[in-house]
Image 1 (cartoon, rainbow, N blue to C red):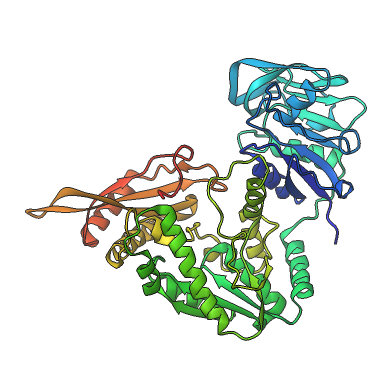
Image 2: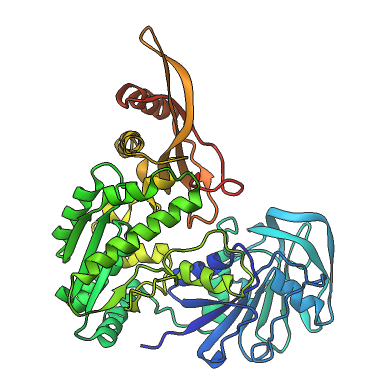
Length: 511
């Protein structure tokens, strides 16, 4: 089945992925491409959205897309930078704003009877994020909406299906943002809303059968949502020709290796558990630098996985749980405008000695879509609701060098924290939680004795995608009980602190 597609041109905005996800929430398929790498098959797209950008249209570094095959030929929505670009280079005027227009604002004027603004009323809250502002509309521009500070908040261009807005409809703070996108994509562009988890499962299973045929496939399971959903999709398509390997790197949560293995076997997956914890801890001995730890863990995993893969005969394919954000960031890193914070272990970089073809059933979808697909596949909601857990596991939550004793200590702390969140009904209100073992000893008193022991930091954040995150205001009573339990039950820890930093400027993990 051919789905209608929306093309999103990325000018480097931190919100570009959010635009794509909002479009997908409307059951419409969307793709992100760098503004300077517009697909040649432009006729395959029913509408185009231009993203925002940290750049200024007035600067020498202004980003210039080639819109010759788009403007006037396709319905186009220009957001923020896109709106200013159309104004600045088409007879309008963009000037520096007297005040940086950032944060919540409310529409003070909305053009009546305009389909683009259907069901959006005066007073509707929108989210601004720009330092330039449109002083004069481009040639053919018609004003559609204003706020008290921004006169030209939305406009259209006569004779075209071109619309432009200086606010961000994709962020949650724009209360009618989803409605506006629906007005543009469904009412104006006439796009079918047929991109659903059910259709994705049906089409992906058919595509895997077609691609893989009767070949054998090997997949490294991590216990996380992505690899689990990928495994169940593959299992549905090729059954026993899928060989799953679940490696214990010695840095998993307490009892996780045994419990996850049991869960996988209960799902009918063909899984082999490999306990390689000693091999990983040996490889990490004496290493303190976070990037070197990641590399040592990555290399050890490849070696273990390769050893196990060689024990299987005639395997032709390697399956990976790569998801769409990994793909976008890898493209951006090679010439697109978005800055990449960390290299992704899922894309590229495979060693030469693993001469297997790649199959990535999830590479077209976002994390929230992965969960929806998992629900369609009947995967246990508890497994789908698991917090993200870093690939290097507790290895990047133990600051400094890693020893078996430190791992034991942090596993105990982590278990008390995570189980406590579940018991208090807080787990599902948190996007990700974990504990960090700090390379700090501090003085304490236990009984009548002076102690000099470790400090742990607890971290719990709210987020939708991990790109930005706020710390969670957990109840004091919960923190008090958790701190007492940790100090009383975990030998070697005498101090507990709670991390109240948001991302940015801090990251979610400490390393």
